[in-house]
Image (tube, rainbow, N blue to C red; front, side, top):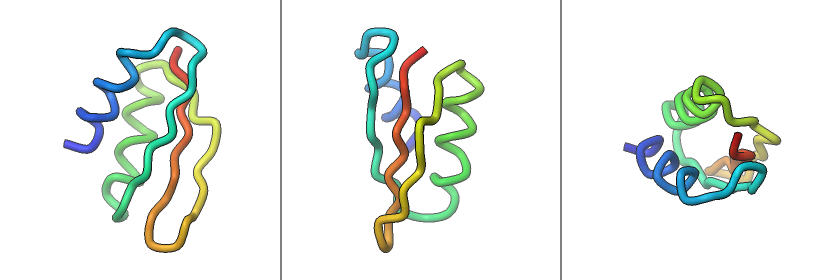
Length: 60
């Protein structure tokens, strides 16, 4: 579900715009960046924020 929500937000952005997503848990941290890359988006960074991670994605 996490990537579905992320994908919907990415679709609203213009190419080149950036989205930051806060993820909790190991599974979303593995799946969201991988799925975003698979769709051609660019992962600009993954930041550890304690019990969550912030993934920054640039829309392709």
